[in-house]
Length: 411
Image 1 (cartoon, one colour):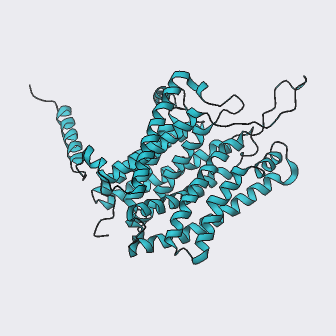
Image 2 (cartoon, one colour; image 1 turned 120 degrees about the vertical axis):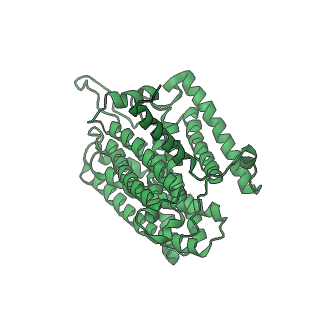
Image 3 (cartoon, helix red, strand yellow; image 1 turned 30 degrees about the horizontal axis):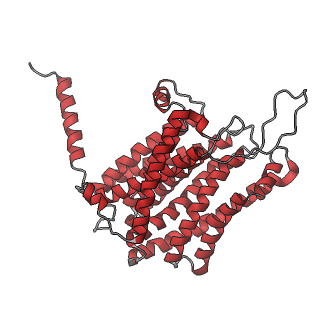
């Protein structure tokens, strides 16, 4: 029986898709290749940590599936917990790596083409890890995906966040494929589109906090812009860590040039961040605005706030200013410190927003004076969060074996 025109066209499209996929360069590897790594003490430690984190992830997910949200220490007064903070940590990292990767293949800065593929792949891995964590915070993730399409909430910042991040991930994957195929023209097109969508998604994630009218400490335009700034800072931190492990602290000259330039950019960004945070806290305290100034003062007395400031801002900025970013080894260790500080930054963002109890509706009846809300993550939350880190490290390791993440020779 003769095929219809539609069937012929459909067959042609399928054939083109298969041909496109079949021409994606990759390394043929097996289980033995994954297990066969250089048996240094550091690599052995990382392997043990990845296995341990993945085991924790399985145990944590099993606990969640058994007990539901009762396995978490979240309450009606503190509904956002550690998993939200870890999700933000991963998607911020993804957007930051996207920005770093775009410097070379989108904006054409030749020095940064050394890290384009590695950064773009890192952006894919980190957002997948973020999705893996947030999936067990959402009550019904499958239902969410279905009704996200069937009944879009156009006035919901969270709906836009999920939709834009889904599009962003799609563009990042396509860009990475074209980078592997050395098609720089199409990689630039999809890279630029993915960058714009990613920036919109990330700024929109900041608006989830900025739209909280009942929480004066976070309400306003600060967080949508703050998120973009801290994303770029996080991406540079991860870039140093990636290249440090790739070259085992033995830096080729082109890598030194690239990382020195990144350090100078990082110094400017951290200085702007310190300026932002200083004025944010001062304006929060000034005037004694109810539900805002007392929260800011309480934050000042929190050790996690000072961990964020010292680890993510002061230490890296000191290392950069000491010799204008030329101390690459020092910047590697400062970046590790910075990532710990970035975690506290995300945790503080979520927890500090909910410190002050909301006013009860029954204002005419006697009620106790509200106290500060206390929260500490449950073991299930901690295991799923560490499991997300394990997923991220494992995917990156597999990708480094499966694909050539180094720059092409012609670059």
